[in-house]
Image (cartoon, rainbow, N blue to C red; front, top):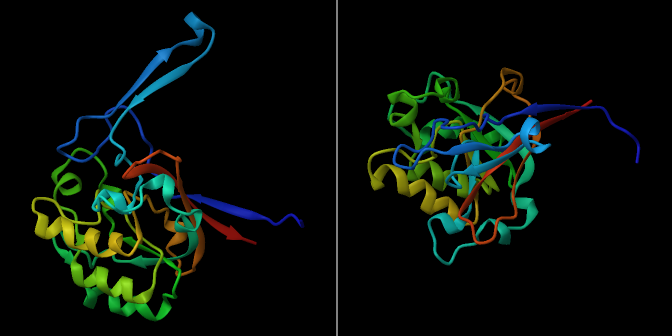
Length: 224
């Protein structure tokens, strides 16, 4: 193989002890269990929900007969990605509907990963805007993405659906996951990837038996 110069962009938030997460979940724990100065090596014990930090939702998350993480083929987790810039358009605790997404559809091809940048990633922290009031994809927006044939949908918010009611939270999950379109949540977008270019993006989870989701390391690649 001929070596090719590649630039990597990390689209992942840092997972750390008691980092921001779903408000009704128990806080995550990162415990330094062994220390080199005492035990001869360092090792940590992790206790957290599988939908913590930058993570992926598998169909099993909303469908008991849907595929869990370990049964999804690897092509669910990698592909060309279109970055939809919704900063300044997506509003506090408001739906992202089909009309808002239609201007981007001419640039989206079947098999693409559709990634939404609402600007909420910059708000990450223990505040109401990040933990309860993010903009969310509604059923019409999800249906439009199904029609476009995308392989995955991602967002920089705590969830693709909204907080506070099933009417806000469920429609996009049910619509996408029913079609085996995986969902990636809490993405962290560096400004460099918001230049209108499509890039290869990967978001591989652990091969976690029977899991509804899993933290992922989301990476965008630029080949020079």
